[in-house]
Length: 220
Image (cartoon, rainbow, N blue to C red; front, side, top):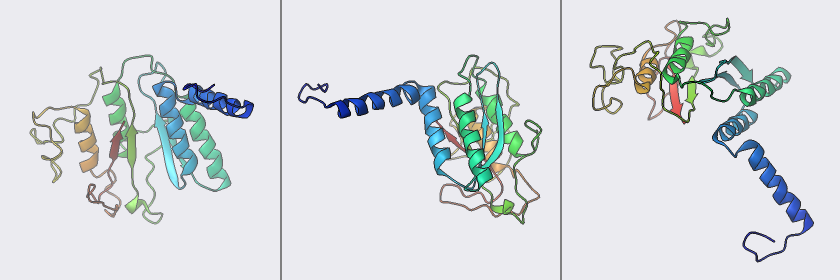
């Protein structure tokens, strides 16, 4: 019978219910699995996007270099490689060094560091690099609890004169002038031109008015 006791289920219905429970347990019953399954579904449905993956809070960190996913045979192979990397990402076993890992992604896009020997994934101007969009999806279940960060200062409020731009101050700045926060790192790589060699032709929206090459962050 169903949980409400009002209906007897057939063998076929019972099989569907068991499979539904098995799917939930396999892919969604803890937060890590939910995040992995959600990301994998996104990768499975999009095309023409480069994906990279960097892990936080695991004993052995891993980095998947930018990998182009599209409808070509090579792109479909890449799609499976990205999905595999998502499900192989290690579970958190160490402290949450969120700021440092997050800052490394910005430094990577800015060409300040290489990851796994791979340069920043900017296309040439001829191949559309001038209007290339860059996003970081920052996913965590905890606050950062380590202080290893290269101190971007009060980048969102600019009370210390760092990274001066039209984006400083309200509505982005916090009310207390706090420095070296995740928000400061986000603003540092939003207001900084990450590739000065390219024309500033990045498409804008009402909420994202920067035309220069920059990093947009979504936090989950």
